Length: 342
Image (cartoon, rainbow, N blue to C red; front, side, top):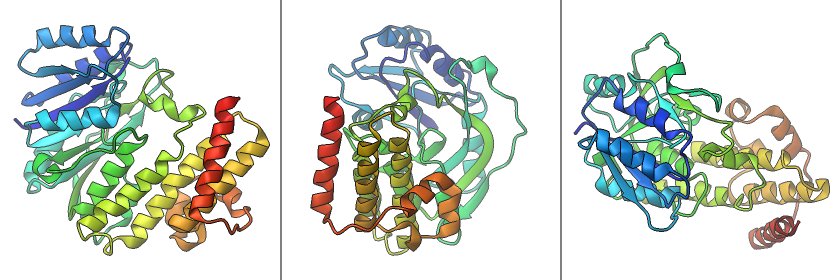
C-alpha cells in the first residue's frame, strides 16, 4: 500500500461527497481511505457507509461511540494505517485528482524523503470538487531543513497538504482534546527531518470560511484559546526529546511567537466588551513573552511575513508587566470565565 489517508469526520454531511469523489478519483489507485466517524449526529456515518459499499477494498469506516475529538480520531487512524506514506485530510476539504500520484512519484525520484508537501487553495464554502482549478504542474524541489530553515517557517501548519512516511511517524501522535493540534504535529516533524520535498501545486482545497466545518472554529469566541500554548510547548518538547531543539532554537521560538500572535489576532476580532478584549490580549502577549520571546527578539523579516502588521503594531503598544506565568494564566482564566457567563 503506497498511501493511507486518515480522515476524522464529525457532522460533515454537506461536504463528504465532494471529499470522497476527490479521493476515489485519484490517479494513484494504490491507497486506502480510513474514515473515523467521531459520533456524528447528522447523516455523516450513513454517507460514509454508502461509499464504503462502493469501494469496499479501499474505504474503511470506523466509528467512535462517543465524541473523542480530532486528535484522538487521527491517532486511531494511525493504528490502522498500512501505507508507506500517511496523509491527513479534513472532512470539509477536497483535493486535486493528481495530488497523491505526483507527490508519490516525486518521493520515488528523490529517495523517499520523510515529508512531502504541496500547495493549498482557499476555497469558498459553495465550491465543489468539480470546481477544482486546472493548474500548471510544477515538479517538487527538495530542501535541507538545516540549511534552509526559513522554508520550515514558510510551510503551512496544515497536515492535509502533506505526506509523512509511516515509519517516520512511529511512536508519533497528535495532542488530544486540543485545538490546533495539527500545528504541533506538522512543525515538530518538519524540525525532526533532514529533508523535505516541496511542491507548489494548487492541490489541497481548504474551505476556510465554512460555517459548519473544521476551519470555522477559529471565527467564534473560543474558550479554548489557551490551547495554543499547549501546541507551542509541544513543538519544543518533541524537538528536545529528539535532540533537535538546539539546531532550531531560534526558528522554534519564532514559530511559537507566530502561532500565539495568530490567536491574539483572533481575539482582536471577537465581538466582545473592548475592555475585556484589551485585558485578555495584554495577558496573552505577556505570557508569550514570559514563555517564549517578545516580538523584538525574533527574526523581524520572517515575523512580518507571517503575522499581519496590525497585530504586530497592537502588541508593540502594550506596556510591560511584572506578573508571573502563574498569575498571568490565572488572569486569562478569569477573563475567559467572564466571557462564558455573558
